[in-house]
Length: 256
Image 1: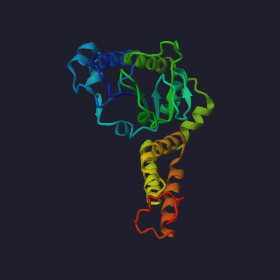
Image 2 (image 1 turned 180 degrees about the horizontal axis):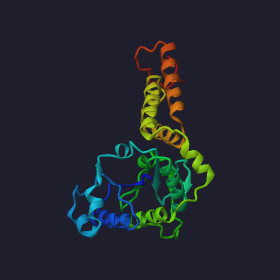
Image 3 (image 1 turned 30 degrees about the horizontal axis):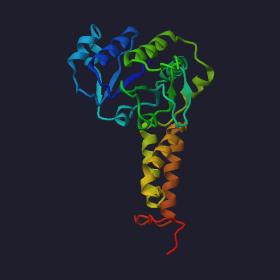
Image 4 (image 1 turned 90 degrees about the horizontal axis):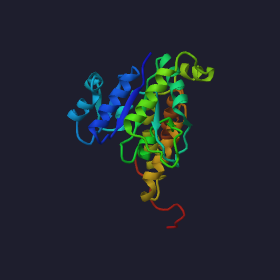
């Protein structure tokens, strides 16, 4: 069974990275990934705090951004306590680990994103995930330490054994597209829409693209469906005789 990858996104303090490594090894987890740590890597403060869990740090993968850290994952959870305008399934740690065990049992790779200590994950990070994990804590003090959050997820991973909901088992056996395939599809759509002048006005283009990326990451697309979408886009471009010319960026309601 493939254990989930605990992905620390832009962690700020080495001590928290080391604490997360200890929390992981407490529950038999060893796959740590680190995205753009503030103080660089390796970090001696992380090694000192790990205290016996040094092998987790020794084998940790270092990545420049979230997209590359999750490129080989079939399903990604984002941990956050803050409300989001992004529409995504929201689950508890218990439910998340039920799903993770079912997916892992079928050979799927799962990643769990943990945000930096000061403000947590940004929308640009969360939009890449398939679902959100929220811990039911005191709403008046919802902030969790990075290592504490990793500990909660690790505990639920270890606690979950063999009982998996049937609908999750069915989901796990489906050949869903990997996140890198979804990313390529999103890029293909953006390319075609950009040529068609869809992203207008330009000032709103980044927000429009985030909304589209969130939609793609939320859809449980199979590999066959992704190939179908690519084929549809290529055929539309062929039939329209696309010559690579970018459409006018003027307001479509304007007259000449």
